[in-house]
Length: 445
Image (cartoon, rainbow, N blue to C red; front, side, top):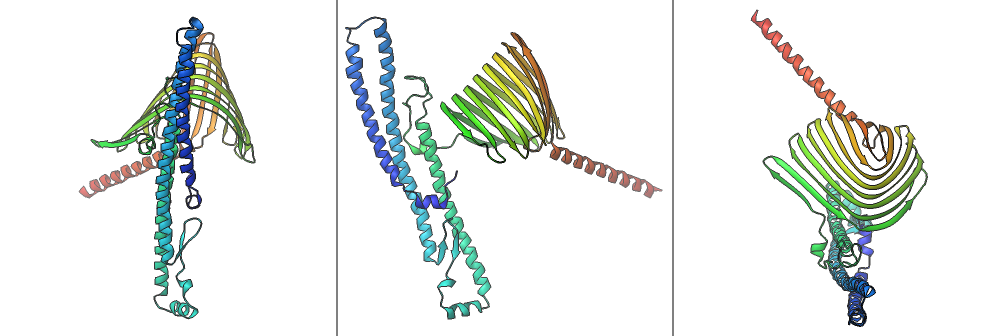
């Protein structure tokens, strides 16, 4: 959620400075603990007086423990520096907002709790002066100019608040990365981060994204990596809402996507790699209908998908792979369609999907190869959130080797209508051309 004008003006930023000092002291403490551990534990038990398998196991574990103490110091020191820089930067930007407001007030503008400026200069005039001003031929023009200037003040204040929000988001990204351990050093994933960066300008930059144009092609790309992460959530149900319970333990989630566009031609692709476990259940009743879903999975999942489109025509292909165990059951029914199905599988499987799109209608076929026991049956039909109408089904079984086959059809009313309109225009142009030819022949005689 973005910061508001009220958030910026009322937040006590001194807490960041206080927190920075606490984290700095924590870093020093972790350094002292590491030194004491190496001296009184590793040193005492590694002097050669204790030997055997137990001693070897203890020494291996103690190395990881000492590493984590050192990593904890590094992480705490990085967080301390980030919080200190955040205090300096956010204080500077907050002052810029306050200075703008003070300037506006000095020029007879009032700024409300949302950051909106209103001209109040006329209110400061005496009754006689107000009477004269209202009967001035240029009164309405002056009033209009005052409103325009008020909007400019509002826009400037909004821009300054947005700059504070952007800096705040930068701090959030930097702190999140500082506490995220994605290396196998020490105890492995989700330990303390020995590689934490304490520079806000480096650690707070957004995820990588690029856009280049060469030889008429506009190219864009984005890369994102998260994890490890662990948590649960629960929401609803409430009137007109769906209730959901979720638990997850993500080791990693990596996504990369890109596209190249040249006029009506567009090439795009996406790759996704996920490892971890998830379990969800949802249930609800709303104006769209009733639904109940439950699923659980544990393993590694990979997906690569590509599209090639020229206007409303194109082809697509998708490859997916999964290794682990998963189970799901789905039942949905409503005015826009329904879905029913279930799956139970353990092992490894690969999926290939290919199809085409033309004039708003797309069709695809799916084939899966399974190595492991499982069964699957699914039927879907109805309107999707983006307005498209979808029909699909899949059926498969394996004991222990087998697979599944499926199909999918999608109808996009907007594209179908657009294609029909273009066809009508083309037919009209052909008719006009035929009429012109006829007139030309008639003129010859």
